[in-house]
Image (cartoon, rainbow, N blue to C red; front, side, top):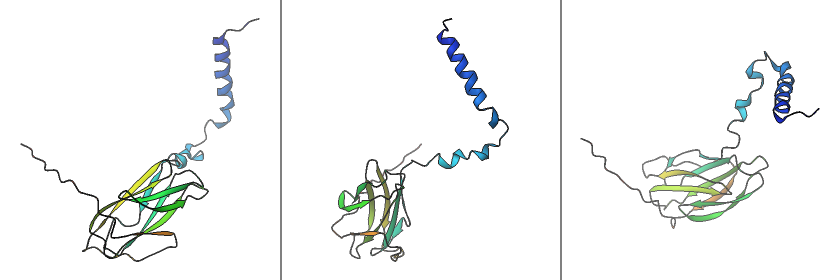
Length: 156
């Protein structure tokens, strides 16, 4: 006897429901799927968003391809390369030169995808000391701060 596609689809739906029967009544916390919801969202975090010239900034990338070599850039200037670990994380430190100009600096780590973060150098901010043993890159005085666009908002 030939069965139609609708019959096979209905049978498959019925059997898939029967397979899940032992899970009925279990609390949703037992599955904890929320723990993995953002597992592959790439991000680049920085420990301080403002510091004085001469400061050290620790950055951590996560959600990246495992064991991949990426490029570190600050305001479009390539500083070097660093490799992600087996979990897709990367750590590196930036040292802002004591003579660096005050202003905003955009940090990008490119490994497909490109992730970014920023920091601001301000002469009135605290100078942050070096912590940790991650790969360090010097942001020399030759790297100029990013231009800042000021927009005036007028309302009536």
